[in-house]
Structure formats: C-alpha cells, structure tokens
Length: 539
Image (cartoon, rainbow, N blue to C red; front, side, top):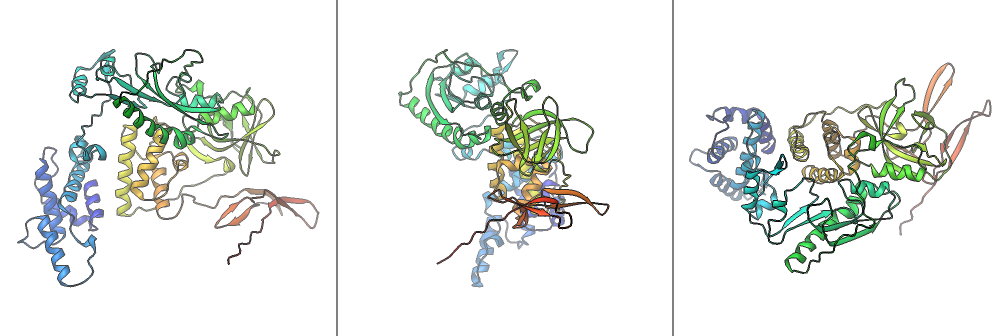
C-alpha cells in the first residue's frame, strides 16, 4: 500500500479514495505496464480525486480550467489547490508505481521509473551502478563493454574502494586520477583518515594522484593539507577539510588535466606507510598500556567508525559486555567523584556529570562522551541510568517522509532496510554519515547533525528522532540529570544537583559548586552547581 500512502499524503486526500480508484484500473499491480499506461492510470485517479468534469480529458486541461474558475471568482489562488503540472505528476506516478511493485516483490530498475541522480538526469549523462568489475581476477566483459560505450577522456576516481581493472584505468586518452585522504606517501590504504589521527599526526591532508597498478602509489598531481586540531575526529576532519577542499581539489585537478598543466610527481618511498583496514576486531581494541594522549588519539581515530572497543561491567549489573567509546577529550581538571565502572585490562572508569573518565598508563585521564553498549548508544554521563524511547504516532505525511528516508538508507547501504537495521553494523562509515545527514535534511527540511546518527544508529531510532526534531522536539522520554542518591528515613531517594534552565538540567558554565549542608548534622549532602548571573542591558 506504499503507493497509496504516498498519493494520499501528497494530494491531501483520503487513502480509501485512492485505493478505490486504483482498484478500478486493470493491471495496475502488474510489473509489465508501459510508462504511458502508468501515466494514464495515474492521471485517471488524480482527475477523479479532483472531481474533474467529464468533458475535461487531460490533467493539463483540468489545471487550466481550475485556475480559470478561481480567477473569475477574483479570490486569492492557493497553488496547492491546483492539480499538479503534467510532468510533476508523471514523475510522481512513476515513483508510486515503483513503490507498489517493490511492495509486491517485483524488482524494477529504479532509474527507469523516476528515481534518477538529479544532476546526471538534468545533463543527460548516463549513470551505471556497477557492483563488481572483476570475477576471478579478470574483468567482466559486459561491464567492460558498458564502460567503453561512454568513450571517456578521463577517469576520475574519488574515494574509489573497488579494485578497478587496469584495462579500465589505462583506457581513456588522459588515463585516470584518484582522490586519497592523506598526504601521500604516508598512510596508504583504505583507513587513512583513521590512522592520521591514531598516529597523532600534526598535519592531515589529501592527494590527487595518477592511478597505476599499485595501492595509492601513483604519481602525485596535487596535494592539500591542514592542521589537525586537538579533538578532531574522523568525522570533523572529513567535514571541515577533506570533503569541501577535496571537492574543489578534484575539480581543479580535472581542469589541470584538460589544460595539459597537470604534473606527475613520482612518490618517494621515504616516509611511505601502508596502514591496514580497520575491519578486524583485534585492530579496534584499546591497548590500556598506552598513555592518555595515545588513548585519546586512538579513540578519536576510531570515531565514528568502527569505534574503539573495550569490555566493561556497568554498575548494578553482573555481566561484562563489549563497549565502543566515542567523543574523547583530554581531561585537564581534577578527578571528580562518581560511580565506578569496571573495565577489563585497566583501572575502573568513573561516570561523572560530563562523561566517563578513563586512565592512561601515565596516570593522566581522557573523557569520553558516548558509549555504545548492548547495541544502544548512550550518553556516557548517564551510563548507569535506564532510558526509554518515546513512542510516537506518525502522520500520513510523516509516513511518506520515513519511506523516503528508507530509500536513502537503502541507497547508502545497498541492503533492504528493516526497523532494527543498524547503520554502522551494516558497513556505513564516516563519509556515509555526512551523506545521510545532508540527504535527510533535504527531505525533512530540519536541522540535523552527525551526532543524530551516532545516538540513533538503528533505522527506527533514527527516523523517530528525525520526526521528533521536525516537530520541534527530541527523543528524550524523560528529563536527564546527574542524580545524587542517598538513604533517608528508610527510603532510597535521588534528586538532581544541576541547574534547571530552558527545560533541562545543565552544569554551571563557570564550573563552580556550592555545598548543601544537612543543618541537623552539618554534614555535606552534595555539591550543587552554582549559577553565574548574566545581565544583558539593551539601549
């Protein structure tokens, strides 16, 4: 019923009305209908919904007649009251038909039914989605033939993770150029951004190079670099520099090739490194013999994918579980009092109001903000608390938008998306997070951050979070706060020790606290955050 939902919400008509009209159309459920039949069927349904007079036979004529009638009444005309233009309706009918066929488990080529890469479609550029170029080490003849049909002058390979046959690399007149997110020859390999941070490099960068038969070994065309900030992660480095500067660098490199001004600078083997791909569990484990600075570099170098792994036991539980750590910073203040978390291989961590403190071999600490444990991402500061997800009822319009989000997930992950599909467990990386955020922002017209993906990595969690944001809310089912727990009058009680501002408990900006004292015993009950007074004077 996906197609009916879409049409119903899109045209603000009841779903039963849509289904009733669709049921009158012969063969609408068949997967062999022509494009023109699909359009005519859709036009029939839509004209019925808009109560078209019998003498009007086309959607275009109905739109004109409706506009004419409204204009004669000399009233304000709302565009949403008009039937859509013919081409907009055609694209919608095609997409609805594709959705219905998918629901019926009839696989049709999406590109032939309205789902086309926008820029390519506008410029009449062919788009091929190739899952594999080779089989048993040899190029696939049909793929090679399809590629050669374009007769490209230059191959541009930005972030290419597939092994491309040399028959393709060397085929164009101007050969092939690649984008790589490191300052080659350092950090060759598929996880170069991660290793730049893990190794504590002071500089990060990108290279555009000429492809050869080695792994990131071809001659350099151009390079760009930037400083690595103290708390950079894979995501921040990519979003701040490697993505935007990378796009402009690739465009500049193509222009240089076209102008015959592109250099070919042989890579030096001095200082060259090849780093393994971080897809094995043993490479993701934290080595607790490292200093705090080295731990910090490792955690942020694994943030957000695949995550720095350790084994811990939460307060009040009996079992040890694998946990992934994210959002590391070097801790520069005194060690606060908090709940201890047992961690295999090192001293206990400390849950406090600003995260989870972990000690390095040098006695210094790092602080992590987020922990993924038992398949759920949690704020480290509330690691010892049980949180529940809000249940919400989706409107018809929101259901349509959720299906659009599902299509985006499917396009990124190349799998069927279920409610419990985990974005990162399905192979998504940092660059996929950026893509997901940008595309979903366009669908829901609301502000999203990478953090929204990290904190809600399963499909159902993610779309519910996005829906809540679009409504002006959030996924918090209860107010979170740093609790003080104690016994009094044979009762266990818990209460906050933070400031309550704008509907949430927060810490004081100045970090100061005030002691709350039991007047009967003069014992300190707890330290309460001390508010700093700010006065804004308007003239």
